Length: 154
Image (cartoon, rainbow, N blue to C red; front, top):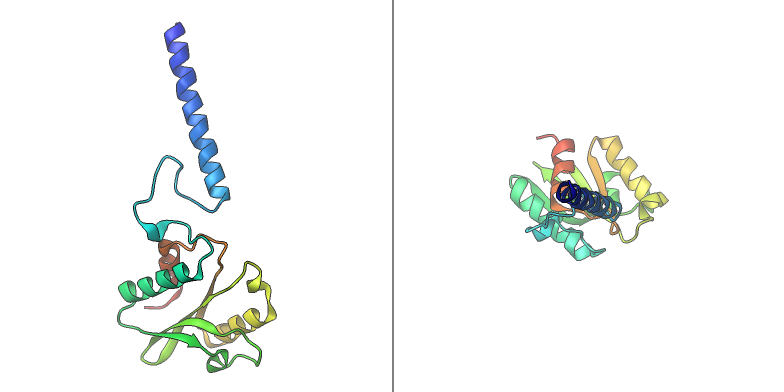
C-alpha cells in the first residue's frame, strides 16, 4: 500500500500544481494551460507593445479580410464623431463603406475617456462595429480575429 499511496500523492500533487499554475496564468491574462507552450508568437501576450498589437491587426486584416480595404489613422470626424473624439487606428471598409473601426489605445484607462466614448458612439450611430485594443491585455491574434468575425457582417 505504501507504493500506491506515494503514487497517488505524487499524482495529486502534480495535478494541484498544474491547476494553480493555470489559475495564475489566467490572472495574468494567459488562457493557455500552464503545461502547454505556444508555438505561435501571435498567440502570446503582446507585452504592452502597440507595435505588436498593430502587427496582429494588420495580419488578421490581410489574411481574413483580403477583399476589404484597410485604412489607417482615420480621423473621427470621418465617422461623424463630435469634435474632440479619439481618432481610429484602423478601419475596415467594403465598397468604400466602413464595416469596422479599431482603436489601439495607449494606456489601460484610455477606454474610459470621453474622447474614446464619443468615437464609439459615432460608430454605433452608423451601425459600424468598433473595438478597443488595450495594451495591458494579451491581444492575441485569435482574439482579434474572433471579435471581428463575430461583429462584422460578411
